[in-house]
Length: 556
Image: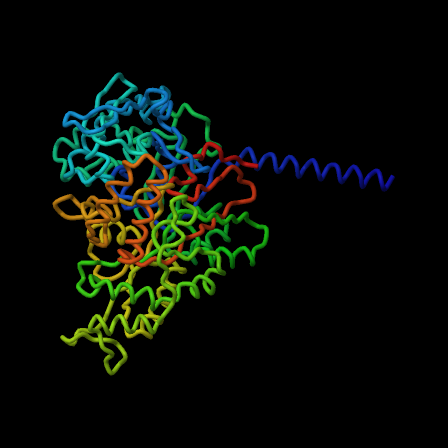
């Protein structure tokens, strides 16, 4: 009898637990995500920032993107254009050059949040605004080479390019904009459009969003709230509401996770790797923590218009005076891949034979001597005019890992006679103003995130140096100018033969390693922190954020 009663009690408890778990699963319709940055803008075509890309992954659908397997795929279009299916056709341009026309057909179920179909007119408007360089759109080379747009029908548009590139099927950053909302604002004054866009002035307007979610609330600098987009016709996302909260201090971000105020931390903008490793050791199996190496290039952008940094010998001395291998081992448990240039070893175009810069403080001191910087009485070097060798060292305020790296670099540089003055800014200021308008004088630590075999024209070509005349478009924040690099950046995209293209990439990497437009640090592995009950999140390891596939996320 006692055994039977115990068995019945056990069955009852098991049923109760099952019912409770099922109830939790059916009622868990909200998700709180923590990130460390707030977007400087929500406009999809202006500026490039990981925080913006992550938010837009939930709320918009690009024409094309690279998926989790690093393959180019359609998202907003029906079929990838190719020479085989006829959606891409070689032709001769009006001035007699080899060209190509590429046709994209939009998905028939893609709608803006106000119910209006996403149309060819929306893509035409985005192309027209991008072609007017006073608008300040990024990726200006795309708009420069796409010299004509032809609306075929309501869902089909053809672009004619003045060159044939290996990436012709990719729409890149060319994304549809709701012309019925934005065109009149743009036509009023293209130069001031970026500050008057509805993405800036009324971001909760449903007509701006065509993804599974739309933005319903914005707290500048603090967070963005999303809700299901009623006009979305694709697979229904699991969560009714997603709260994306910005916590720039990574210690506070971790505290909110442990307190249950956050369900997950996005790896794209989350805990530094060392902090995540320590968290995993402390909390055991409370969360799932995944480490994803990827095309994330942590580096120091240096301003080449600052006279001392314009000297290649000084830039070489900076990298020689930085024991990057020791930093990776001591601060990151050896889990980061040392960078010798801007191309990741995971990318097929990586050249293993490029010049490397091992820690060599004696060689660093010799180069500084050669450049005219002699030690002063306090150990800091001075030039013939008595000016101190002082470099302002900046990064994103509140990022505990980067701030720790700063402190280590500051000490290492001092041993070579270089004074580093640390001054940090919130990410939205650093990326939205200081970098984009080149208001820094020294070195800035941050990361570029790229797609597979991404030609770095916007960060290295001399035409991409942001200026007031260009309305600050372009991402060559360093001001690097090199005629051979410019030529390579023109030649690589139009070389369709892989082996010939590989040779061009090798030369690009050789120039980068010698000239050091920026100081390479390492290629980052991101730490993604998920609750045990969430499944289906697949980080990509490249430019496309995991949020683009939110409809695959499920409650377990």
